[in-house]
Image (cartoon, rainbow, N blue to C red; front, top):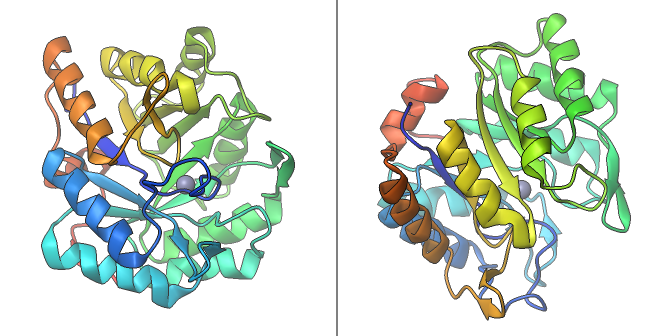
Length: 276
Ligand code: ZN
């Protein structure tokens, strides 16, 4: 089995300080949390940013501040969100590619998302795919259900997405597929041979899905974007805490963990560590 790539998603769009007082919000807090997670063993940091009021923003200067602060300290791969919040405009979302991250998210379809609607029209996805391809940014194809895998493969047929593909299966979001072992297996069986994949079980299902991913040869994402509780009734106080648990689990289950450089090779990222 290839080495395990751990992504940390420290902040997210939907989690707020009402859910946990430990959520990193300022560029400094987000960068510190990514750095602490890298020290614990994470290879990828998935970045969302907030404005002064703690609301979602797509301000490139705020992203850049996080990027600079992280890159000053470590070589973790940065994967910038192109989603923002549910109200973010397509123009704002596409603009994130101008920061030339090594990776960016590609949410491969529209869906109900909690109480809102997450819009990812075919025409928007084609624009986003073209932009990532032009800039040699590896799209992380986020699939909340199996239909989204096929949306991405249809776009790939138009030569806008290149293989090998990297999928992030996001299970357990209200509006997407529930986080069950059967659904995870179905997702894995639906992607082309040679693809890499990682999986998330939102909220209470994170550890179960993480464990299955480690055993099945996938990769994992952890962090307060997906779950704020370390265990039932106990909030995590840092994102690194989740990473450390995965490291222990991987060790117990006999799976080696990838450094950022090894993750670059596994995911076939462009050979460039500096971004921005
Ligand atoms: Zn995200």
